[in-house]
Amino acid sequence: MDKLYFNRMSFYGYHGVFAAEAQLGQRFYVDLELSLDLSRAGSTDDLRDTVNYAEIFEQVKAIVEGERYQLIEKLTQRIAEQLLAVFPLAEVKVRVTKPNPPINGHFESVAVEMVRTRGGGPSS
Image 1 (cartoon, rainbow, N blue to C red):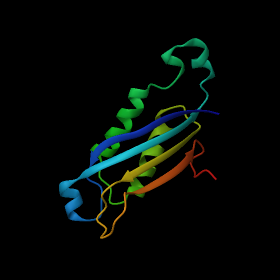
Image 2: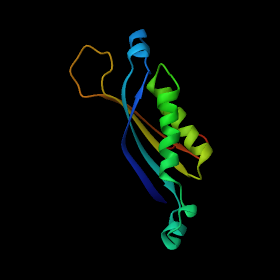
Image 3: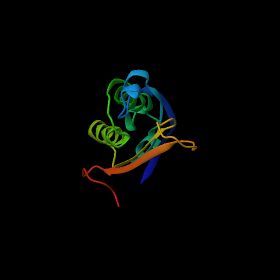
């Protein structure tokens, strides 16, 4: 299976359990690994034979910046489900990184990664 990668897309969202997170918001990063057959696009060099990268980006942006969730687990799953529903993908891997969670400690970030298949469930 062929893959498309979107690396470190950056969005500003208001996800989190605490009121300050909903009020102030913060930066979130999203990485995607999308599995689909790209052989036709590789032969024809025609955008109609692949997925439009800009449309993928806009779908993710609409979710991260336009919806609000308490948990990045829910945000991650929502992105995966939406991409599978809209685009002809066999499998999606979504990683959402929250660089500044309200945790009293020193670390770079926290992230959730999920793999979902067209059949609807987690991939093993």
